[in-house]
Amino acid sequence: MNLPRMQLTAGEHSLQVYVARSDEERAQGLMHRRELPPDEGMLFVCDACQVLSFWMKDTPLPLSIAFLREDGTVLKVADLQPHDLEGESSEHAVRFVLEVNQGWFDERALGPGVKFDGPVFLAGREGELRAPRG
Image (tube, rainbow, N blue to C red; front, top):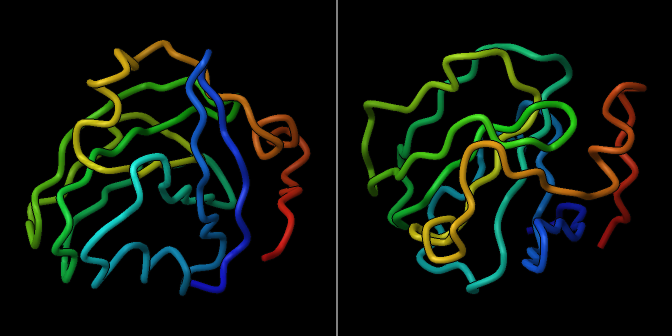
């Protein structure tokens, strides 16, 4: 993947994420990936807060998804099954969505109310993303 990467933290837990910012990058997501290293994921960044729905078309990897407020606070966590077309809705307007290996949030006891820190959340109100390329 030729996407920018950044580190996110939640307390003592650290995660390296690919950052999907464009419509094309968000549509591709983690499709066709068969594995994902244990502390890696993908952060989907939308231009504005909105109710979002994600599905698993062409994604053979079981994932967990977290819908995040602009400041990085988790609103909802759900598990997604490979190739499931049902989708999962944020239910509330969000700007960020974080996908990781299924069980990552549960294994670390991270759920609604937990706050992730990272450069993208600091910039949230200005609408900028400060993520290094590479």
